Image (cartoon, rainbow, N blue to C red; front, side, top):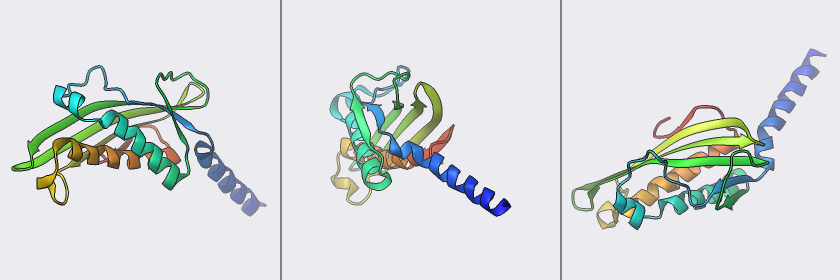
Length: 170
């Protein structure tokens, strides 16, 4: 009887973890910059990291985690279903192709189910440009950071936890 009970507990915990994957996750597109973020105007004007982040998140969530991500222009954390409220807290673009890139993006998010907080994270990705960095522009390298963040957040969505640190913070 104890073995059967133990197996039942494992089965129920697996089902509970996969419940996130069964429901679509609603996210804002574009992801807003945090009110207190001190992000250079050039990044805001020239780079499209706000849209790239959610596009990569949706791609990785669908292809690797079998989670559907839907976009909303207006988002409220008390909406029914799963709502991922994210903000870009920081984006740094220093250096250039000649002296070397130093780019990073910091994102924070909270996941709500029917208005109740069920998970939260902070995630940062840094990049020096990768292969052929000398031939890449600043927005291209920042795009690499949000691509990696999209993958990190998609993996976290599979089994969300409170106060998770993702990417280069983890």
